[in-house]
Image (cartoon, rainbow, N blue to C red; front, side, top):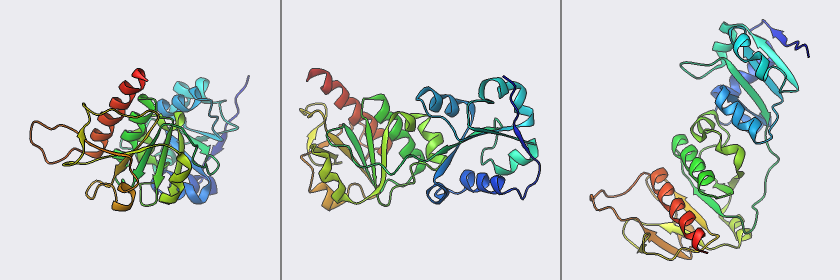
Length: 259
């Protein structure tokens, strides 16, 4: 099949301006109703999960390498000069390949699904890493409460390494929305609760991961069915929230095997 991409040559093209916003402004996707994914790895991860992009964007220098594979995967394919592509990317070493996906419809909390709740986790790298751990260890849903980093921002997407496309994601919710989960909530503490390697963890469950400095908010902690702590024989005061999440979610995955 002959592929005929649409060539864009003007820096003032409306689509190019939108791509620049989606690539460089973390919350722009909310207004646009679609988000930007850059690079062949994330593109393949989305396609492998059955996600079809609305637009594929390739620089002229990338066409020979990626045109046959990605040139016809989207409803529309756009070709840019290298200079124009470089004007929209936020990466230091871009592959000059990207995709625009329609934002999933505003999802509701799915009751009974093993979940991770993000309570004002603000670092994009931490959020993306937690999404990767959630997907790896069998958690199907991530719920981001208000104050958490934007889940579909370019930085979180890059840190998630494709995990977004394996998860049911809900963001911008108030704590009251968690009532629909109908699952025991578990929280971590630096000083309180049973050590996680000794605890009997319920399955399915929902782990609450809190703000990098303040931890889980008091009102949310009061909802928890259990509090656990992670043994730190080296004596550090606390763990990075993404590291703590990986330990907790792995412990739950092991516990799930015993249920």
